[in-house]
Image (cartoon, rainbow, N blue to C red; front, side):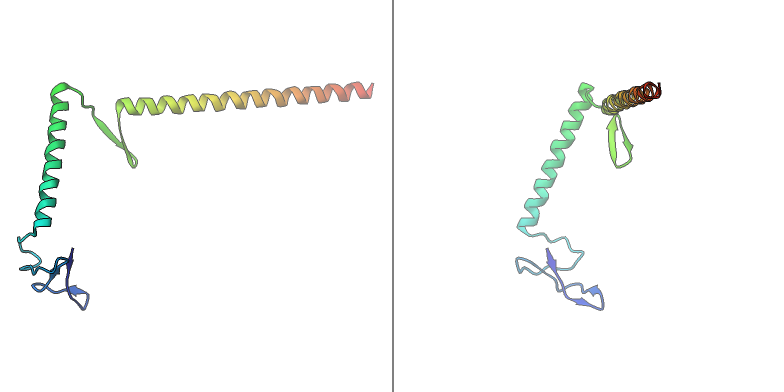
Length: 120
């Protein structure tokens, strides 16, 4: 983290200090501390591992095309699975609504029959 002075909403260049108290040449300089070098090395190793992992998947044919849908991204297999779940839930809701409607109709028919019997 770099700490600089602020004047009129703009940071000044050239006199910044990092949190370890070591002076840096400028905001655009290439001088890095040991901590920053270690972090950079760590990030590069992570990227190399991921690149090798992706390359291996490509060689084995284990990759799938992913399509962005809204804020998510799905492969065709994931999308089909999501749609199956949605369809199952929708079917359950439809069946419950039909059952509820059937019970209401039966109750209505019984009430009408009772009303007719009372009038006799």
